[in-house]
Length: 236
Image (cartoon, rainbow, N blue to C red; front, side, top):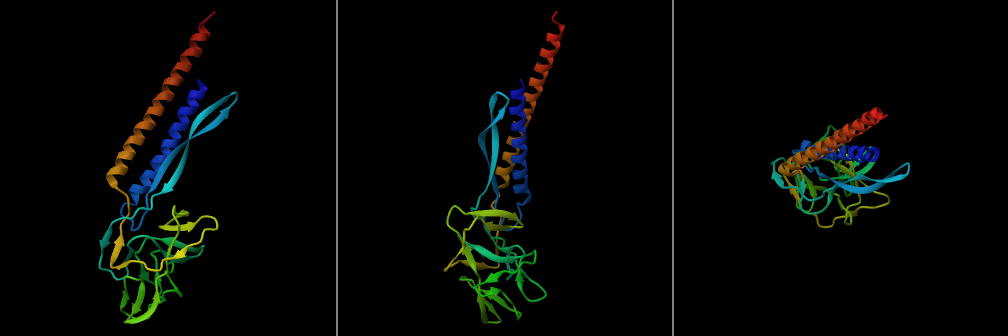
């Protein structure tokens, strides 16, 4: 019976991890540029003394499909139509994001909501005026004067990117970004998250039922094991 308990417990653990990922997707439903995660189960094997047991491993992958584009009218809200990422400078190095709700800091730098500078082809973008216009090619004009061009980066598919939170991604290994020569930038728009709330809620309900099924299996096995021990103890 112990192998059965082990397999059922492993199934419960896998469902908990899946629920955490799905719940995080739901929590970021209204986060601009958020990319949902998909939890894929993999059948692995683990050994107990004298036995090799199937167990469920979990692999979380990011769904980079685009979200819908929503007009905000804010000139510092930017969206990328099609492929590519905004390039930002963080304390940990250069990172990539689709989260386009930028603002100006006290030094006049165009930054993310966390204060990381948005990079242009010449470095951090400085706005030393009042009117900011960014055209469809990513050229940044301040009071009608061209100051820089947004550095829009991309990678070969499948994207070799690691999620870091706050909408940021970093490249895996030695992968290098390439500059997008002809980006399509929309000023006054934000890309919404690509989370489909109905789909995620259905997934949560399904995971809950699977979790409960594994729990019932453990209970039945425990009862059977208990009965076997007690009944055997009565045999003389």
